[in-house]
Image (tube, rainbow, N blue to C red; front, side, top):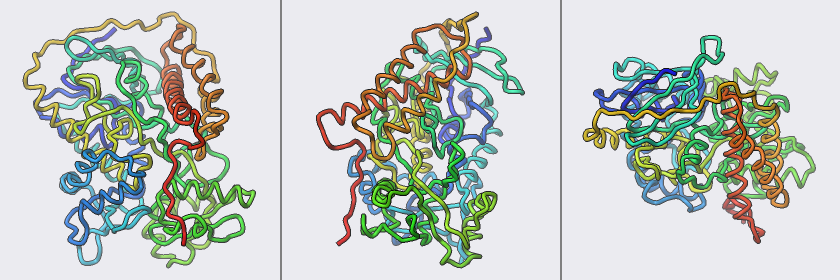
Length: 509
């Protein structure tokens, strides 16, 4: 088996992973591991924008913090949220310096849009493809760094703590994406930037890489995992009733004045929350489920047909184009929508420098739990969190690595040579359980049964000897994350009528 040594290994190549690599000192030897091609990540799918107070005389970090706390049900970590809102200007400024193009007004000032839960226009955006603009900017930047090596189509199976840092077993794939070889990688510091857990659900807005690998590895290593049952279901995923990966219709569409309508074409948010369509995501998703129960229908629509067609096309070119391929002209037609798994607020517990409870292991981006989101993320705070805390992680490593000797301890992994392939159907069954038992409003009566079945799948994958293939790694990750989610949810619901992750409604007068 091949063996390689690096000062720092970053697992994940979304915005948080690449920005961490950029901020590491040029003298540090860095490896970035991407599960698939660099642009296949949740960061690249982010439409709305990046929230932050940057050269905004009428706005303030305190106002941003207030909105973040309201959306998060006041379960947000105060210290981490202070860091988030006060340092936003640093990273927005740096992205602009690196070449990220955010939309401007005719007077040359940056256009800031409004999204649900925000009291001010503070969302910087690149039309409706902000994530892709940021991700490609970071890719160009990091690819030019001589101290950074990037491996695409590579997946980490296991990570173990050693006397000098960490060893990882990496399964690298050939150009045709077939398994090529196992490589042991040793490092002094490890950064998990592996994204969310969306693929644990039957329907998600997440990309194919979102299988919770970093969270599952950290859990097996003994790191503390926090609030994994705090899952956000976006209220306006495109509902074509056919595809598992649901196209997101951005929060910004409602920010620009779109209405939500039920199966009768009627607006209904006034019955549930006085903020109407601009209520936080969890409130809107719950309202749609309540309205579905009231009307006996799961047909819901987003309507922006009352806005100027040319404005809509210019403001939302990607959404407009994607909907046209589905036979819908959003300037004339209602857009079918329904809540769908979108984001994870919990994850690997970290401090304000992204340090986990395992010395030398950092977690950034969606796989981490900084506490800034509380029980519901405020729109467009995700890209901001990814940059603020990955920069802080890199700065912490820059200081700590100065005293680390250039010695690497190697760990010998068991690659399960000659073992049979894992039986089929595990991932499909996990998705069915999660979709049924822990959707927008959890099925409290079924949580324990679902938990027991998922635990059985996880135990089997952990304890029986199967070939270490990509399918096996993904199934084990999904089983582990599903187990933690349902276990947390069952514990919260024990003896209570209250359900986890309950939204805070502002009732109409």
